[in-house]
Length: 123
Image 1 (cartoon, helix red, strand yellow):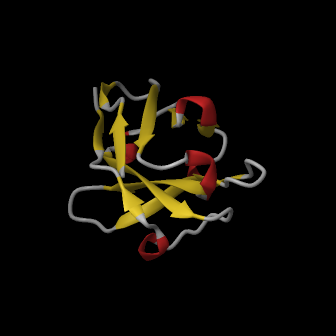
Image 2 (cartoon, rainbow, N blue to C red):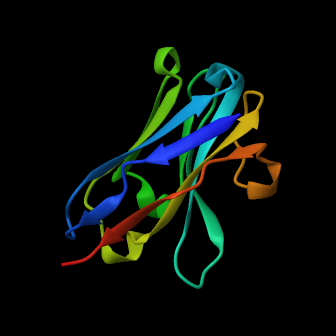
């Protein structure tokens, strides 16, 4: 099983990035997929999640309206569209898979993790 996170990079404040999480070795529609991030010197925290059952989406409050999570089961890929980026969004972003339909904010519940992709928001 492998989750490959990609799409990070350097972007100016107010800019946009789209992260991708490509899965192999598992059927993505059997899993809820979460995005987490870890800023330097801080704990890894949840950002967003999309369930497998009905595609329900969840966001940390500060990301609502700026981030959009989506999934393409045919491509076995989940996306995180990030708009209006702020310097405080700078972090390594990780995707993770949780078997079953429901999302969770608890990182210990996730079964598989990607390697992370670095997002840097700076002028």
